[in-house]
Image (cartoon, rainbow, N blue to C red; front, side, top):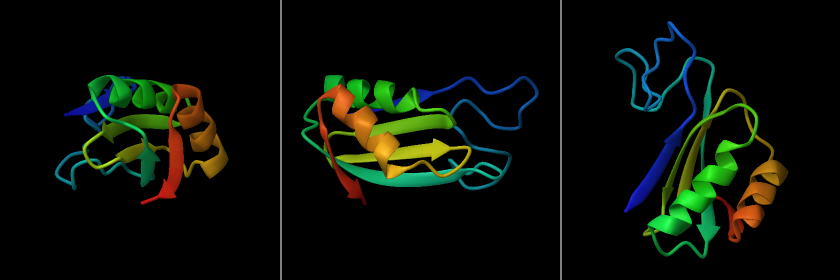
Length: 101
């Protein structure tokens, strides 16, 4: 089970709600950054939703896909995020950021 959240794209944007642009690779965004993190403690869809919601609140985040089965969280953002910002969001959700995957 996975949970993915998207922040609304600007009107006229070439990117779909899933973050894919034109014919490029899925999740690729012009000038954007995609980072995969490992989060400890997620066991179900509720966990995925809680982590996704908190990380989505970080400025610049365009989408989050959390996977409890693997403990991986894929974050797309306009610019690179600090590990401290992601750690604080994951902590707020009640889980532990292990680091970048």
